[in-house]
Image (cartoon, rainbow, N blue to C red; front, side):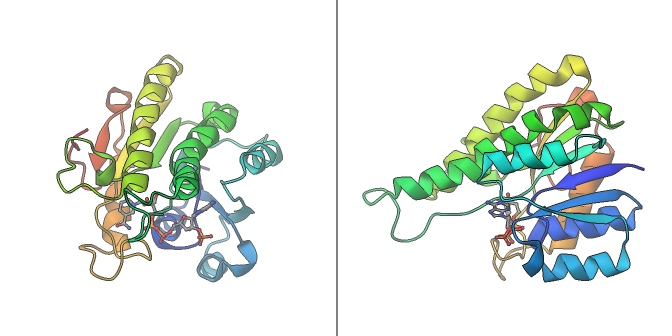
Length: 231
Ligand SMILES: NC(=O)c1ccc[n+]([C@@H]2O[C@H](COP(=O)([O-])OP(=O)(O)OC[C@H]3O[C@@H](n4cnc5c(N)ncnc54)[C@H](OP(=O)(O)O)[C@@H]3O)[C@@H](O)[C@H]2O)c1
């Protein structure tokens, strides 16, 4: 059975990825920080036996190692690095930057996705699709940034994009693809109620991009509707 591993699977876009892939008949390894409190995910499991919940806080890189060991016999067709944080607020902009919060953003939004790719590479090599997907953001685009602000988030997503572009080149000769996606401005806890689209629109669009992926697209940065994004 085709298998997807998703980080940050308990709410928002991650939960919607679980729903859509389980509904499509995929095996879903749904990773979340706190399975005991993942009510939405537990409710989804009542409908789909193909969802397996695993505890994973990507802040702790050793937890990534431990989970990879636990799943050492698995094949993963698609890894979705979805977990992310927006740590900017009105009191930690330039002049009063919170360097600890910045490190936290870099750890979760940049280092952890790369650590996931590195650590789960053996399982991805065994999968048929061999694809690493990164949920990035338009805010990681340097050329699109004409309003400034959000230094922590923008820099962490720009760094994710740069790192994943390099990884796409590194892995191309092993036929492993890397995709960088902008989900749109989506109605989730992070996107807020005023966002332009709902999770279903965003995730079904991203799934269509993932399903249509060819190795020639590896390293590209796409919007959820398949349009190329500016770097
Ligand atoms: N919504 C938007 O408009 C938008 C726009 C552009 C990009 N994005 C990106 O889309 C992705 C998903 O965002 P979302 O809108 O679904 O956000 P969300 O509703 O805030 O959900 C964030 C998810 O990430 C998880 N997470 C946070 N820190 C984690 C950690 N240390 N370890 C494991 N999981 C962790 C959260 O788990 P907990 O419940 O345990 O906190 C939650 O499942 C993010 O990468 C975000 O940057 C979103």
